[in-house]
Image (cartoon, rainbow, N blue to C red):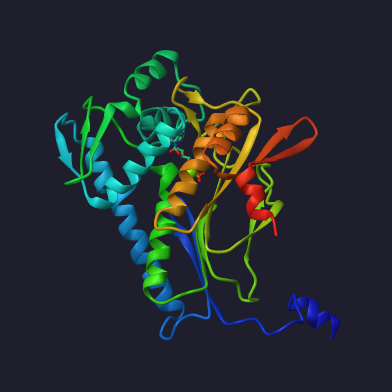
Length: 335
Ligand code: ADP
Ligand code: MG
């Protein structure tokens, strides 16, 4: 009997019914769980609904899809106003707000550098680009080189060769869209994740807050550093331990400092941001997690304090890891 209890993980009240779907998306994976699904929503219907949402998102904002709206915009070298869809406008405008707040550490025009360092849709190079290539790419970078107009939604490039990369917001935007779909079909308890970025509503099958695991930032391992209880919130983690290459023992990861044109080199290994529920909360958590990581060990926590962002940092030390948290994060944890 004891064995049966531990196998079921709990001997308390019977867990509520739950359906779950996972699959590949955006070069990573999605995972959606719905507890007490509304009538008519079974796993097959959920998968179809989720995949339709994700396909629509990719068709709007992916630089990996050559016919997406964003890829067509990137190929368009016009320096006049170009109309964009309301959705694409929403994501780029969020990026511009985070750029301004982070003093340009976050920048959606960083794409030429991302691609040059081999972290974009083209071939992975695993090599350091020549300084003149970095200089040439840097000339194309700067969020101030992009003007936005809300009504009707349009965008103007200061240079025809501006290239926009929304990868730092895409998982969050996708999770927000999944949450809108789930709300729309009447789900009230769910977790909708794209890799380390997710929207969470209600409680899990045991009637408790969802436990969101933050990984220990060690490449090639999947150890949990901390489990965060989350409900009616968005969470996103950015880290330097998954997508990187090494040359002579030095790590080059996929976060580029738009000021230097090179991957950020520092001890801040992982940043997790928790954002209150709202239509764009996962996108904001995603963007701020990236922004705080690019800002680094000193300036990242300082921005989290001044903007009252709930943030959790993992810093690499000689012997293991050190954690740091913002005041807003500690407030969430307080009973
Ligand atoms: P992940 O995709 O692993 O969740 P992030 O959300 O932090 O990680 O996004 C990282 C991606 O953001 C990079 O692969 C690159 O495409 C893009 N990027 C890199 N540096 C910056 C930056 N300074 N500002 C905005 N986007 C960036
Ligand atoms: Mg991000």
